[in-house]
Length: 206
Image 1 (tube, one colour):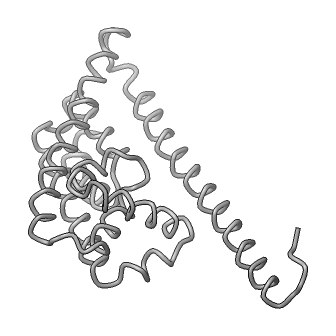
Image 2 (spheres, helix red, strand yellow; image 1 turned 120 degrees about the vertical axis):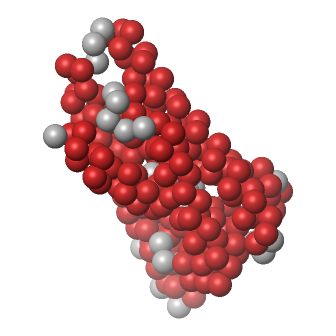
């Protein structure tokens, strides 16, 4: 049942997941490749295509609407400003490596586009970075399954527990990000309120 489901929908889900962000779903796919439910080479190729396409889209959106996009969320605005500082110092290094820094997957391509980084150069280096990311993460997850089998014996009877743990980890990271976003939004709103109060000679709120 699981194998049939993954053969029909697994690679499409992997493409969508890596298109939008994708660390957790790629780790899941790498583990499932170890279990024989997916093909490791196809996992790498699909993850590369999803990641590459998604980041190209965010880059071109950044070139045209960068400031508007970053202004939509307080956390994006803060991270975008920091990302721009990093890009101006070491542009090529960040284009190659930003996927490996958790939380920067969406913001960094927007900031790179906003910075005026050359499209042709980004097309090339983004492709190299996406390939390294897809191969490294899928391979690491595949060998994670091998290590588990060495420790636990047959992974077959534990595979649902492992999949559940990986999914739970992904959900926890998502919740953590949402809480952090809400905290930053609240702090930003308070700072803006205090600035507005200061300009009108009203005592700032506590």
